[in-house]
Length: 93
Image (cartoon, rainbow, N blue to C red; front, side):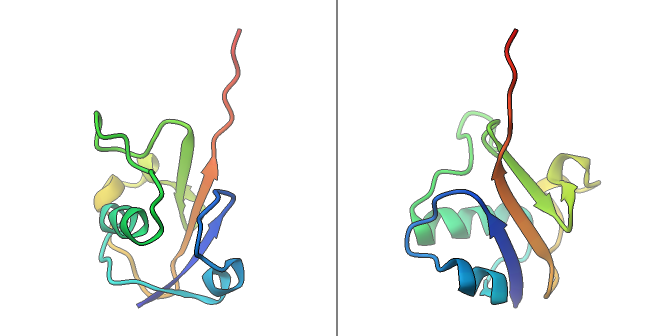
C-alpha cells in the first residue's frame, strides 16, 4: 500500500520527492509504520519508556494528531493516507 509521508525530520536515505509521491509500506497501522520507518531509515521516533511517539515529535494522520484518534497508534492505515512527522514546539517559562 502507498501512503504520503510529509516530514521535517532528517530521514537519511529517504527521498522527499518519493515520500510525497507515495511511500510503499507494509504497515497496517500507525504503530507498525513507526517501527517500519525506524528500522528502514535508522530514525528514533518511539520513546522506549512509554511506547509512544517521542514527546518532541508530532505524528499526524490526515491532519489529525495521533493522540486525538480513537485508536491512537493502533489506527488502521489505508492507501492514500497522509502521514505527517514534524518536530513539536515547546515553550518554557
